[in-house]
Image 1 (cartoon, rainbow, N blue to C red):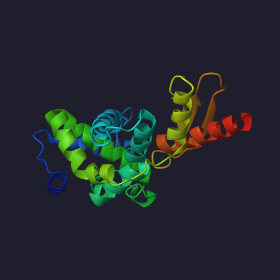
Image 2: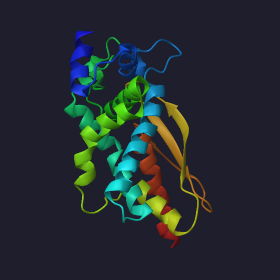
Image 3: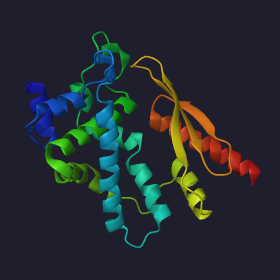
Length: 225
């Protein structure tokens, strides 16, 4: 509980339901059989983060087109950004890992840190609603939102922009395969877009696999041009 108190000081909130925070810090490797640890909270936190960042981007860049806003958001919620903020909070030190898993590098693994931060955001949301989550997110993201002059580009953003320019539905990503041990997972993600065969790629996290799949599909589209 002392560790949780220290982390809560870093988060700027004392939980009335500390079990939410404990769940957010529970890595799948330490969960009971049939329990995926903090993955459900990660799923929720990803959506909460996306909403708050999108809301702020629309306010901050009022005259910018949807495609540019999408590029900015993709950068602000990607694994690198999340892992950097998690590192600034020293979040890895508070994770609950399986016994004997200390040597796996999970406390410094960018994918694990990014997922845990999303789970913490979900815990804040469930504890105090959207306003509490918004307060935390803007505290740590506001400078990043305001700083870039030009919207950064990445494979997912570029592919989304390509589809929008042609009036197509946005690219759809789905998990084809998820296996490997908890400390070294492998994700295979397929991306689908109208008029093209699905393309899949692997990565050590869902985000990395999605970016790799988007990059492969862009290469395919460039060959067709």
